[in-house]
Length: 329
Image 1 (cartoon, rainbow, N blue to C red):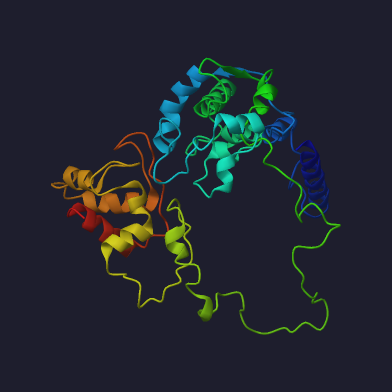
Image 2: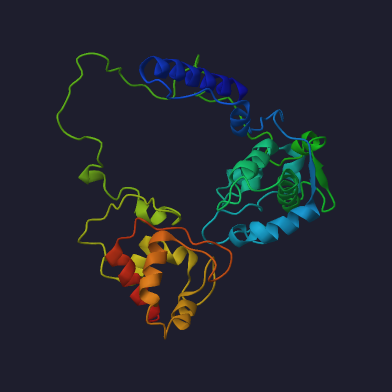
């Protein structure tokens, strides 16, 4: 990443010179501290990995406090997030290739992981998802060690550090899973596809041609229902408006992502719909507060796991959903 930091700084310096010529006082050179704050990546050869260590035992403590609510106590995860552990065997560790990947089984993080540096780096920069980059170096080492222990890659009393992480790399079940034997790398062989180049006399049409044509709608099912219902982005609604059950509040709850975290009568990520209805049954102001929470998110009423905002839900839909939930779904 140091090369890209240098390019970034060069562009920033060029911008500063340009600004000084046209807009005096606009822009400045990045400080060494600011550059260091960006230069946090860990490469496959472990360059950039900070010195430190963390035990599996410590990792389990951090995991229970900050990770298990989304990823499960043993990496099995809930209905929203993909599983972390599972699908690997002792034979996979010995040969470096996960056999289950060829059988079409559900894939877990440890099944696909080919570089332990990528796991450390991702935890360091992106986890926990509601408070990224808040884990200490020891906690990142510890959580990484705990995840590896879930796949029996390291023992339960293991202490991971910058000194032994290279040896752990040699035990990853899918360490041999990366290959350059494909068209993206081998540019001298036969191309994967053949198509005539259109570099002259191309027809230019004054209409939008990037939309899904009517004859192709529904060819791949309903993408809006295939996405994981986390965050505001959804797949394309390919069914015609006439066939969509927009008046069915249960279907609206499913489409809006409510049922990904709130089951009717059991806790998943958040409280069940029955619990919510029971808690606010006699609260006259609950409807307005819950509508606001659907739109803006919130945390603290039902535990430490935050509810993400759902800006894609219309105000009228949010109000209808809240009324439906408060009446017992």
